Image (cartoon, rainbow over all chains, first blue to last red):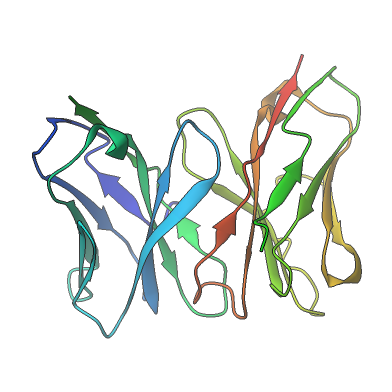
Length: 110
Length: 115
């Protein structure tokens, strides 16, 4: 079964609005990563947050991690049409590979 | 330097034929992964190579699938006697050091269509 489950499955917003995506997972992790995928091809790494961190920022991205609730959120502020993509969370347990969720499809309309 | 490259970018084959997909990881990356992504789905882990250790093949869906990594660099994923359900985008990724603890760099993928 999938370790990470993103919510919502799809999100449609206007340019300038904020987009929030959530990820829940089941087992212990040592890090959680968010990736973006355009046009069903290769994924691009956005941000990595370790299990001892609660919040991390990168440009317009803000990621939070709540290990007690086994959940993470990705916030994209002041969204742009170019942010339109699928966003995946992936959990890592150190020695194993990453386990990806099914993703959230984000559509940002001009 | 160059990113992860994969070839071919698209492959159309007939059911029952064998196919080979190639991945060139980033130079110096010790870990290499293969994933499969069906339309509108997440990534399904297939196999993982880390340095000189035995590969983790736990994600391979059947014995028709195999992969090798020569000289700790280039990897080839082979699918024998392809079936229509094998149609998907096959993604390769590489990372420094330990898997699961590091950022993975993805190639553009190979879109496989089995007729």
